[in-house]
Amino acid sequence: MNITLTHFLIISAILFSLGIYGVITRRNAIMVLMGIELILNAANINFVAFARYGGMHMDGQAIAVFVIVLAAAEAAIALAIVLNIYQRFNTVNVDEVSSLKE
Amino acid sequence: MNFYDTLFYFFAIITLVSAGIVVFSRNIIYSAFSLLFTFFGVAGIYVLLNADFIAVSQLLIYVGGILVLLLFGVMLTNKVVNVEMKTGTLQTFPASILVAVTAGALCAVFYVTDWKIVSSVADVPNTANILGEMFMTTYILPFEVISIVLLVALVGAALIARKETPIKN
Image (tube, rainbow over all chains, first blue to last red; front, side, top):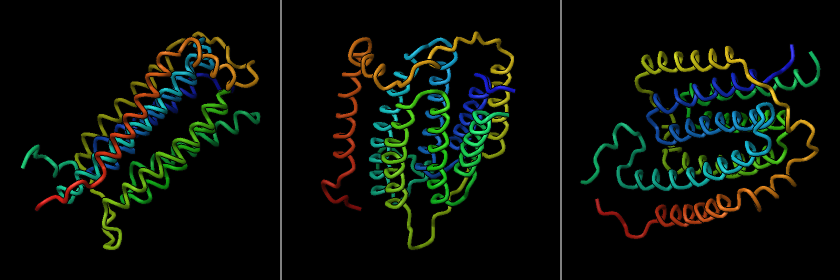
């Protein structure tokens, strides 16, 4: 049995589902961020797999680079916000941080 | 089963098992460190897909940058000395059902669909040259825009994260 496009797509589907599970169930905001990173990686695997097998040629890989850059920006901003939340509320659990203004 | 298949299953198992540990582990430090292996496995999958530049970027940016940033976040927002690293979970039962349905639907669609296979990147010796040319020609506008987005995001993150005035409690 040869490795084909379907194998890569199924890996990315499972990775995506695990990321969704992490985002939904975890209370810690940083764990939610890790789930988002898993989801972005799953999307990236799809882009690169279609670049290899699906006739996207190099465009898929170029878009994958853009996704990686945006993930870096997102992680930096989100962690800055999480640090601010921690300073103000003394917790990073997303279900306890529910007030916009004191 | 040839060498390529063996490598594929090796990286696939690394990726999926460590992603499972990331999601299901109760200890946030274990999660952060097994995220390292997830990123590593995904980089291996990129190599198998003839995307060498993406794989190296993945190692440099995710493992070298984002993961360190996440670990800093963990260390700064948890009471490490008080051994309060456990993180709770919410709504695990409905989430499991939703995620199982999502995964099943996605896998079914991927499996049933008759993909038109066009093996295009396979014969390219290295992708970095072609990617560089594309960024300077076809994708010049997104490239410049994303550079500015990254610069603004990093400056903004530094500005948000630093303590300007002590917060009165």
